[in-house]
Image (cartoon, rainbow over all chains, first blue to last red; front, side, top):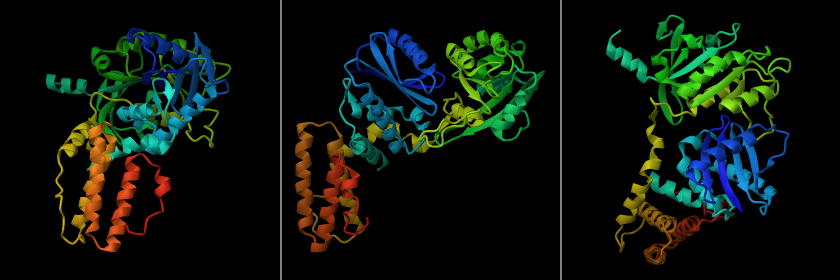
Length: 143
Length: 294
């Protein structure tokens, strides 16, 4: 299963975190700092999967943004790697190509992520269906 | 300078810019960020403030680009207003990064949101990419090369920005204390209230026997469609679900009093709206239109 999803900028600051397994608040900062050090220090040509403690990290870089997913060994890391890309494509579709939008629309990013992953498992990958509730909300807000 | 002027200056956040390379003037970087070097707003010994108004899709913010040649010129005024820190170092010298050492404790004290380490280009014989990156990781900086050797991959769908462009981007992605959000992007905050409001008002009359020819009719269809969307987007409870079907029935009844052609158009609209409301794919209904544009 998926343990957590992190979005981190190039400075290593966490922009978004979502945990699917209870981690104490006090331990999250430490975990995130550690995970960031693990992933940001890697070169592009190095593998995107990193063994970390008793689980595995799947990381992908998009311009100035890193997305890191912590998964158990029972999860298919290639599938998660593609899931990350799908997530970014959904963001891209919704925000129409503005990466910095994420900063100022964190609520929307959370809605999107929650449409895709529930309880540590992938529940939806169809882009239109992921965005349908959000589109409906936006229509309401506009009117 | 009067006390109030001084307070005003403190209120404006600043980007502290320093260079640890004698051959590189901080002004050079400011020139690249702003396009040209503006008149300084203030000058105190070797510390100089330049004005900058950041204006993007989301906000405008007045900030100062503040040149501080070394830690000795730091004052409490600068310390209090610093929200971003940019340091240039000489990557061709082996000890390039060591010259930054005095700044580390200052930065740790101030903990600005944005921390950027700048050089012309990492250098194998001086400070290598690996060294610079490790330094950045240890101190939570971002490395930006003004003139990187490897240009971003053209084929990449999400190319990295580099150089000054990246510095500007990073500064734009910060929430400054002087930030003024633009109105049209505040909608997120009103989302809940508008949801609640539309759930509580049902302004359309139930029997409509006027000939349905006017814009008024389409406005009403839109209202109905909106309620459909509302019913499916909200919490999925039994009441909502029942209401959804009552609503569909209502809309069908309304349509039955229309002339044949309009009835078809109306039915199409309702079907599309229902499809969208239950989360169907746009592509499936794209191009199915009978040509009527609303």
